[in-house]
Length: 358
Ligand SMILES: *Cc1c(COP(=O)(O)O)cnc(C)c1O
Image (cartoon, rainbow, N blue to C red; front, side, top):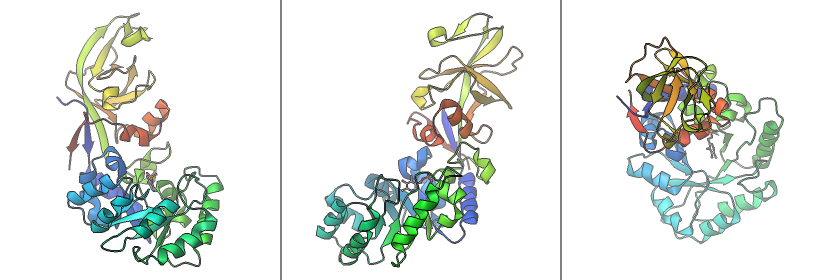
């Protein structure tokens, strides 16, 4: 019987990319595989989709180099740019593209000694107010980049939405019009849509889209992804390692916080917050077992959690338990735990085994 295991499906992954292509048929794809492909295994994911996408997006140079050393040859974009001047030759040699979002990066690029020009995406702050150059600086940055022999003359433009998951909010349209306006007299390719933009704002697709969470079959809002023809790539499973008869009026687990109001059977599942399962999940949150949902009761511990199987339970030690996946949407677990799905998948710990199922 298996302890906590993330089962990863390349069939689901490819299906999701097809769905994304249908939604944005005229855009090229930057597949975002930062943070170990959102906990799904960066080498497996990137190799599985390399033929279907045009570029990969990562947050750290180390992530990009790991892709290169594992045989990925498609372009890779550093979404936050480079952090050290001395990284620039490494970036050039490895055919890595970089965002430029501030004057320090601009100066470093100008001063660098690189073997070939580097492809640059100029990051524009259209309202997120996190990274990016201000609208009135775009011209200066653009012309300075254009005039540097270290920079590939085909400069691209990139920006990011802060509220694309809010379906009836004007802010996204405002950001898009700022982006279009400040790039309209320049001929570089443009990208602003991540998952929220791809699903909800088709006018934002432009030349390049940057799907992250939807590629993994998870919706960027707390609505199950099946609504958008996306299939969860990960099924998080573990096993029942004990079944105990439990008396009415007795508590379960640390703090004795849950007390049964009836005689029942308690199942112990080999997964806990030490695997990344959220400790804050409330009593009553579901797991999926033998074709039905059963509620978590008592506090989640480091290596285990407990579920109320009910008095009539026919379950056996060794049975597989699903924590999230097609049978039990992760969006539901996120909502009930007060977190976002992004956090659940990226917080899985190295102890969780990975199994590639197809
Ligand atoms: C993480 C990231 C994405 C992907 O976001 P999702 O919401 O997961 O689709 C896209 N662009 C940038 C700049 C990012 O940092």
